[in-house]
Image 1 (cartoon, chains in turn brown, orange):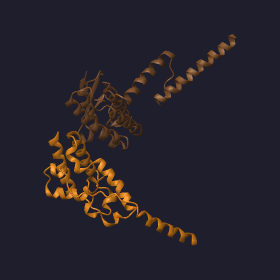
Image 2 (cartoon, rainbow over the protein chains, first blue to last red; image 1 turned 180 degrees about the vertical axis):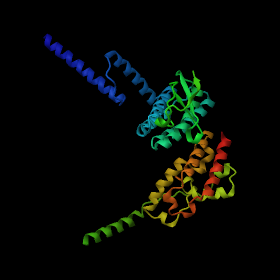
Image 3 (cartoon, rainbow over the protein chains, first blue to last red; image 1 turned 90 degrees about the horizontal axis):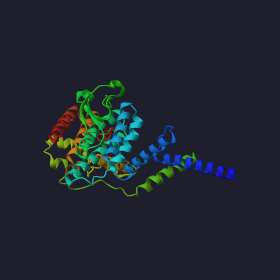
Image 4 (tube, chains in turn orange, brown; image 1 turned 135 degrees about the vertical axis):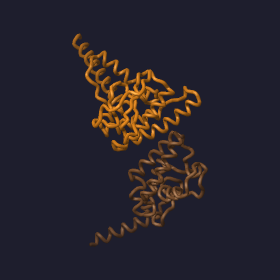
Length: 198
Length: 151
């Protein structure tokens, strides 16, 4: 009897594990690093939150997260990854909910989103040079968005004066340290912090 | 030999049959108030260059050559025109927000600078759509001034 109970117990545990794992796979296709049970639970909650933002009420933070991921791909000179992340950002931008803002803010946000979506879509289908061209204007859009929505995050606005034949280009980052998305490996540390948000 | 003959006949029949598929033409006989040329004071020479080199795919009115009304050329053009208008429609200029106008102008400038537009496949047939260096400089200067005035 005891053995039977234990067997059933083990099977239930196994089933739960399998379910949890497959559930996680559905939420996110990134492979999760092995973690302890507790941590695992926590990271799953995070992912659930993100998934909700993607689908329903995309907050400024969800857009910023996607934007930062895209920026990192450009820093890493990774054309394919930037394509993917551009598409992800485009869909997050598309589900942004502006209903809690005033009429004039809503209009402004609508203009920003329309423009930003176009740039994100272009990034999802372009070569690196073009991705960076669009990223420059996208960065302005996202910066203007933060100007209206505000954010809890601590963000640095950074600027590289050399981009595009010394026309210069700005971007946002969560780290104070410069990692240049316009030049990548060629001039990884070109730039300076222009402004701190929060 | 007989096989080739059959194949040729089949191809011919197919070519005739597809002529009966409807062609959706991008034609409009009026210029809306939201047109780029209506909203902006465009000098006549630039106006003419834009009309000839850009408007076939970036407006609601294409000046079709005769062969383009024959399938499968018409299908090929239909896709191109649709794509072109999605990207930029000069007829709808006034409906774009200033932010988007800015983005569009930036793209117009870089596409011309990099010789990406007008498309090679287009200028191959439309020799008159090819932009000379002088044309390019003129258009780029104009678009840049317009962009600066919006900022």
